[in-house]
Length: 340
Image (cartoon, rainbow, N blue to C red; front, side, top):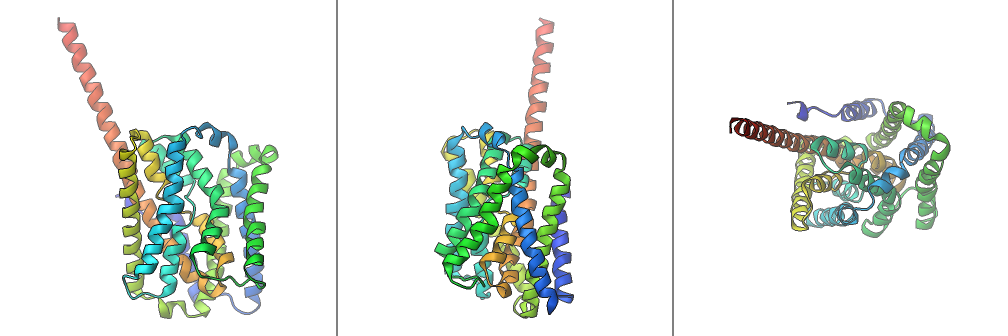
């Protein structure tokens, strides 16, 4: 079925990882790619801020109960599950893999896919735009903070945590806010060139992945990550997503949300952003560890798209059947009325 197809970005990521595995950056190319990666991350977060529409956020901001639960799911429930996974250590996998699961759990939600799937399923699109966008905005600040609070890691930045936070604020938050504030001058260009911006975002992610996996390959990542490890990452991703979806569905019904809001909660409260996660990891973690740490995030990205696409199709088909039934019932009633 088409819902099980590999996401095009995932295919590009696989090719990039293979390229880095066979032709990793070495010597003077490492410095060149580090410089290029810094520019790519800056451009990525600037354009993410520029794409964020205040008007659309305001249009869906009134549904505070829904937004509160989505934020809880994204920044409280997910990290709690990540901490449980890290503490439990159910399988004999490397610490970096569990760190990767913990890391993906603290990231903000995706924006584009959350909105697209909510729309396809017949959910509350205005609320989805507000929730997903707010999650992306808050994540630039909250995710590094959660890394500092929950994960015992250090970046390559000399000078300790204060300088690390300063670099994150400079590269991520300031660029994101600057991009958003520049919308008054470039909003029209951004809306006309969303396709080009999307390709630029993907190119930036692929560049960061190549740089990260080059360092990981040089440090022997494939001696620590075998086929069975990859299988268990896939299984863990399905398990983590399943728990989050079940809890979100139960919460939507428990708190009395209607069907459209239930759909929005499911799709906005269960996603994790690859676009935010990969470049952020490049700043937060030692360069030798970034490749293996983002591996669970890359696999979870494909799993979440596949499963949520399937759910969106089921919601859509259910709505189509209901509409067909109501149309048939209306036609039958009209026939009966005409025969009286």
